[in-house]
Length: 258
Ligand code: UP6
Image 1 (cartoon, rainbow, N blue to C red):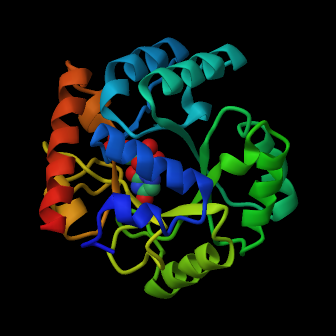
Image 2 (image 1 turned 60 degrees about the vertical axis):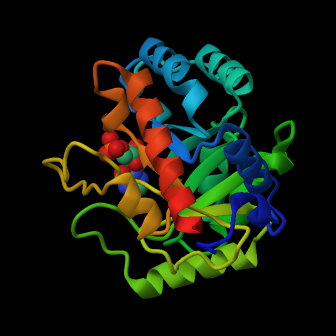
């Protein structure tokens, strides 16, 4: 997988969302996902406008945004269309299927992608598919399953990661990718690896987050898409920072292919 280009890997994508992600990444030369973790809807839209040209995915935690409304979602969707990126709501669903279905129905209207934990078992995936199916173009939406985490002391064992990867094999048309930290977890060429914990300035925060550089995350840890949050949204010039991370991450991908 690590030596194959995104163009070639697209041919193996069984989820429509993964296929369109590969297209966007190639069209924009971007494997950057910005975690737009900001406190207000105004800030969310402002940061999205600034980073939009440089990203393939905008990752939200809409439940930490004070005044996130249906209008915010509509504006986000307009920006996603304008700048050609997908919206991922990082809700990390972790419930029995019937509850996950109801929870996901609240965001499926505007999110192209959602994240979910695998701990409750494989039926979380068809539950999320059911939530998508009530939306226009629901069959184009996808799930990223959390196989591993970036935080210190997390409980994700290699066995857990492997079992999570098996769910991607079980539901290839819905599971577009895995959130993970090591290069051997992703089970097939058409599945994307999303890796958070990227920052050029610091090694971590005071609450367990651990960071690596773009080169390490793409070259050694196997990230196809890297997530940068505070490294971009908490600096004085987020557009310039996004452009810098985009360049470094894409170069790391090209180095990996070479
Ligand atoms: N995230 C992680 N680690 C994981 C999974 N998800 O950090 O294992 C998410 C967080 C946050 C972003 O929920 O939105 O990635 C990282 O932000 P940061 O770059 O500001 O630390």
